[in-house]
Image 1 (cartoon, rainbow, N blue to C red):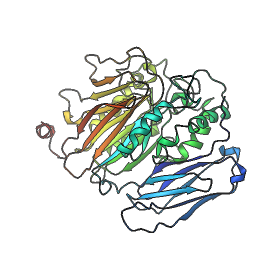
Image 2: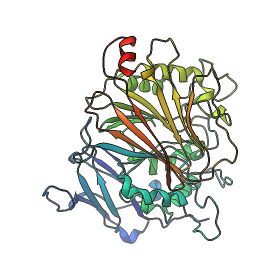
Image 3: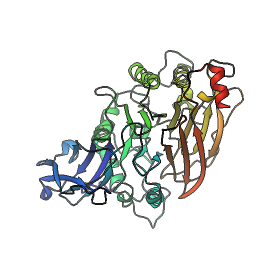
Image 4: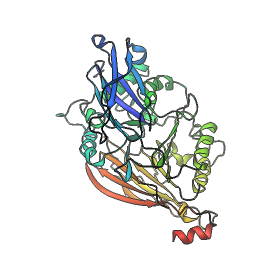
Length: 459
């Protein structure tokens, strides 16, 4: 069943303006000790010292961490290219983030990627490698042109229960992670691309709403080993939700599984139901209310499951079943400081849809406060053969675009330099290796006028 015990690899996780996190796995005792070094990449435009600097080492790696360890490189400079190397002949490149509110010199935008849902050998082909990921191949071909700073992967990195569950112990979960990282298609999408992760149900169990009961502890073991260990810092200690700022954009990564109330029997409008739990909800509301540094014009809320209720199949597992809490969040989104746009990025549905959430007509919020969601999946999996997304009159959720077909979908988000009065971003959709749609958003003007004045400026 391809346990991939021999897997040896290194990858970059979260990269800030002054630091970078690297995950290394090396089970071969003959490779110990493992040393990690870094340097200014030789292709930097400035004449910089490109000598290697030691940054970390591991003398002993054990099954306790599935033979992995992490290294954090500190003291880096913003918007600069670096190269890292591991003594087991692994390595790669990364570029640090620019100073908050800016983009890297020589560029006009921040580009990052978003998708979710991968499973080896889907769609099945008897001629493909057992761990092949066709969607990784589509993504790899676009990476040189997109020049993305990172991938936001929105859950279902493994499918523990597809086609069937083989166990509920930590090793069974670990094996699924190793198989993805051992795919022959993985190196092409990770050598120069940092990956940041959130968790969804198939990393635990389908439609999971059991908090930290079994099998969550076993599922969380490799999730922390392989993903949160190199994610952005948690909002509070030991939390599994994260936030960070990269250049002209701020991000809040939700955990929609660990803290949620059971999906049933309470109704979707019940004030007693929570997707996030009180601590996470409070942290999200503070994130939405805070004023960002000059040049940061966009707030991105990252949800593993769709924010819209327009998906009518399996809706008990989505925000459609937690409408009271969702309304609190929507009102906070509509109330963000003037000149700031809010976008939700989600996955899970194996389809794509862009949805707009305008404020209620005649409310205290201007139309310029409209929130948008782009829900994109799968990166390499099956798509649903029947249609599940439907806009309904009176619900206030507007279908902007619906693209259900395609075994591989990912989005490229381009956030333009935030020097002007209004922020501009562009979403580009790629399906089965082809760019099929794009959409441009602008923020409302950064003025402190009343509703009428803001509407007049917005048009």
